[in-house]
Length: 234
Image (cartoon, rainbow, N blue to C red; front, side, top):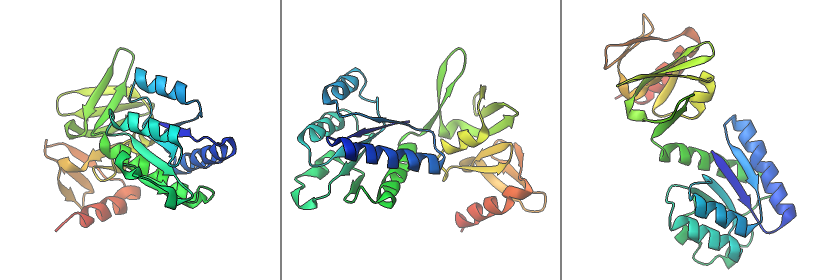
């Protein structure tokens, strides 16, 4: 995931960049953060690929930034836009760009932290698929086609409805890229698609999937799994 900080003021841009980078580090999520005030370069990158950036932090009162937002939103409906606007009285039709967040006090790290966290979760929900890159190809696997993930030392195996795919990764990194309302970690070695669960045996600590597969729940994840299941139970 790529985040772009584009603000006309160099000092403020650096402050926002530092806050954003700190938030991403604290959330332990995988994002690349860029900072640029070169509007022509940004426009060129977006012209080449309108999906270059997933999250944009723009000055909501700057004409050049609004022009970028307008160009972007006319072609990309899933990107997340965060506007920085200290003086909200000067805002004019800012919501036509469908911003996800309005930050009025950029120096307040908590406000920006909330904005970036929201944006990241919005991006995860907007992409109902998991991308797998291996030696030969790049694959898009929709969440609905994933049964569970299994860690085998340095290799993660994606068990899907139609195929199994192996790739190098840490299971914790995989978990960060999945929507938490649809996937749950139940073991040091397993992540399960909650939509495939039909039964949980509390005594044996086993999850049973619609496919007939059995997944073990470890002691360390048992409380977390049961809390999730009870929260979504009638």
